[in-house]
Amino acid sequence: MRILLVEDDPSLASGIRLALKPEHYTVDILADGASALAALQDQEPFDAVILDLGLPRLDGLRVLERLRRAGNRVPVLVLTARDGVEDRIQGLDAGADDYLIKPFEVDELKARLRALLRRSQGHASSELRHRGVCLDPGTRRVTCRGEPVALSRREFTLLQEFLSHPGRVFTRDTLTRLVYGWEDDVESNAIEVHVHHLRRKLFPELIRTLRGIGYVMDKADEAP
Image 1 (cartoon, rainbow, N blue to C red):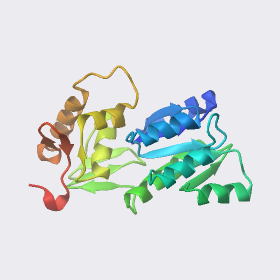
Image 2: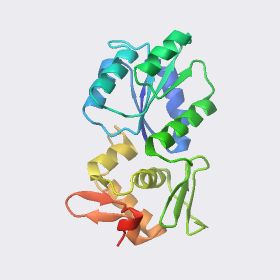
Image 3: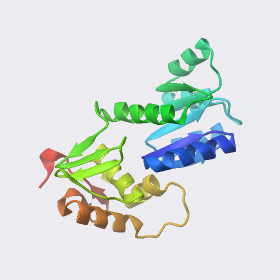
Image 4: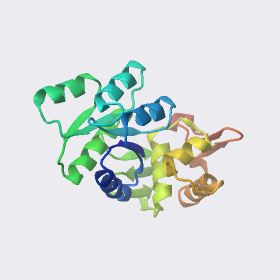
């Protein structure tokens, strides 16, 4: 899962990224509201946004309002030191999906983020199941037909994206950004390698190649 973290405190931003890395999140960081709005308006493929309100250049609340007016429904977790009831109401009314007050416990941030992603994807349970494959984001365990499967962090992230959106066609560029974010040192065939490994460790028909377009995990009733 790819997360955009918009936070102008470098130490806090680094700490959150470090805390989320073991959870198989790809976290990209921006430090001001204007840059965040531009990235989200460019249709960068983020699964969720963690948004501070007290940002330079453009306040987080304004970012949120403009996103929602433009019809962008990306899940947003507001992270702020503004702890007044009126502030929380204002943030939720502007379109925030959840609200977390600083200082906070990292475990609560993780739990709220998992719940936010579950709601946005229409899953009542945290487990993702598809054609005998089960992925549990909370425990970071993957099984195939009941047997445990060991995946690398990148493979886990890629599989989670496919399982969260069966039937969605992903281009290679989109998958690269979802798995690696804005990293510069990504091999040109990295996604092909990860898909190959997933097919080998799970089963070949799980992920289908659309030549010249990308990849898709067919919905269960569409699987060949």
